[in-house]
Length: 289
Length: 79
Image (cartoon, rainbow over all chains, first blue to last red; front, side, top):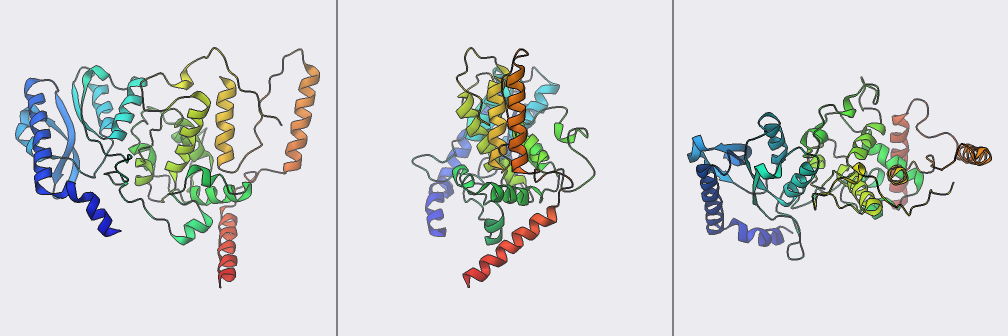
């Protein structure tokens, strides 16, 4: 396995590739900042061997030499929405992965960012027919332990496989996962498409407060419902979760259902959210009792 | 639109094992008989299903015990 990984990483790890790719990108960013095409550029800066989100400006052009890309990922577009809220006219440049681009599309739909004020430098990193693994922290999916596999939900499970358990088992397995929740709000805080000023998860009338785990399963279901037409399957929520709850799987089900029912593929375009529109004709029938 | 939203919710609840407890129907104010029928049928269905596992105080430790019992059973089976 390690050998294989080395093979995949080979083209990215050679000094030549890195230097030339980084230099091209850095030159581009410098040019944009210099010409005023963007007022600031959001990317990653290597600090003490750690790639950290950083914004580069015209006043500190020399910093751009430290601009890098790699496996690290963060919802840079979320930072952009915060900046845009304060300075609506500011032109923002962004380093975007495939998932960032999908998130940007959703943020355009929900008027959190103005596409005219956003410039992107794209890094293609999601798995494709030519490339089995993503060039990000999902390069190697986390493996679930045998106990979790037996009583909970394996994070690497497919939606269809998770649906095969009997009703009682499905319930127990999900509740086992949910009751590990520490209510850290990490999933929401990292989520690139969570932008509400008032969050239902913090509303005492909707979700009881004062206990850990939070009220299950309502805490997780409320978040899941809100992901309808928004979740772009970046997996940052699951990456951030200290309790290893298979949130990505849950939201994948949400997105699949939204696609089946509304014919809406979240993040791939900037059409209005299906939850916003009235439709001409619906062919569905109510489910029988 | 309502039907799509409700189906969405039904699917989500089903995914985590709480299916069958949410129902949607169209009944006009002139359809008293239909109303009675739907409510009666749904009540009967829910009665047959028994109380929701979420009713009362949720006993999370019971779920944990159940999980552990399952692990034990499987380890005995396995060897």
